[in-house]
Length: 188
Image 1 (cartoon, rainbow, N blue to C red):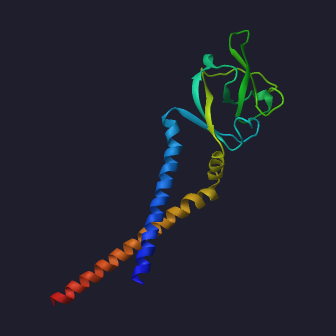
Image 2 (cartoon, rainbow, N blue to C red):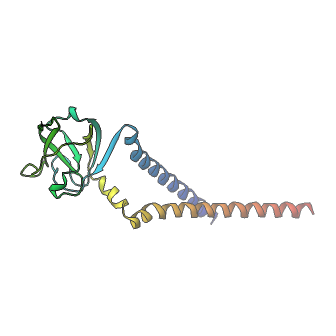
């Protein structure tokens, strides 16, 4: 019986360590890009399929607007008149200036048959440009945006680790108390 308890305890310790290592690596992977100046966006549409698939995470670095080139993939908010209320990640297909000297851009999703029906100017002096993407990892971020999924993925393992620590504490306190009782019995 003692052997089974020891084996179970050892397995629980190994499992806990593996979970902690995985969580540490995941947190590092989440935080590290920001330390190197990258912004990240989850691609939720299919307009860039072929180069950046739905569910990918696009990692972008800010560059001066004057350094943008045709072929760069950028994430931006289309003009209000476009009717598109969310950020779009598309490739620059035309780059010019308007009569006031402000840059004018046209974009197109790689999987779309036609260019976007709008032109626009960038209001900032810098613009994030996609440097690379990681396929499918964005689905994890989308799932973790759901409260119940976060509880399941983060809360349940945390509760199990806390429960295992509590069981270990109770065992240690119990063995400590029984050894003290033995010492008291021998001295009297």
